[in-house]
Image 1: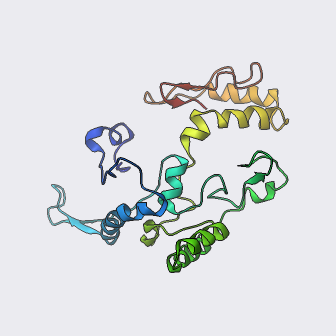
Image 2: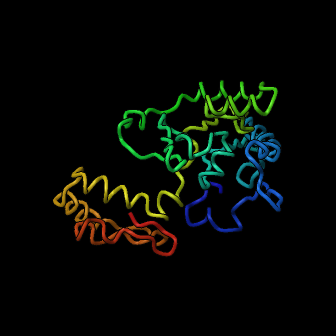
Image 3: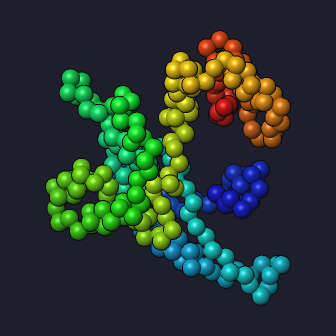
Length: 242
């Protein structure tokens, strides 16, 4: 999507650019996606250097540059795209790691004893260094050990000098919003843990009622200070109301 265009224009099919389609019948496995990313990155590198574009207003030509500013996809795809380890093991953005339950044989992110690690952003320089080291591993076993230890594998997107695999990955909208994780956080962590009071919710409600949203946005939630709080927090026509 071309973000220079007005919001009402940028999402129209005629203004969206499909750079590639990955062939089926199965999706690319882990780092195999790099085979498809490589030619796209080559083009992005050319656009980063800039190209001369002749327009009606600038017949002499104007230098246009293009950058990749975000990766918006579900969690498994984001991990493949940027070389992060599985979402079942660790957060891609901070130093939070999953706990392993020996009884259920499953990993989870429960518990708050290590909350101090939740907000420590990963070092992008260290990430790049470890990603390059992954390339030097000679065997599949060596690569697996490297990923287990450093939580990262190589991604072709790292050839872009400006690309930040920590900050450029959008928090997964489907799992965090559509499936109710954000709602759970608001109700069970903010409200039940007394981080926000009913009086404060009333203030939020009053301020929301003063907002006038553009026509292409869903309506803001009502009933913020009713019931257990955010009772009108839901999805309508594919748009999240928060």
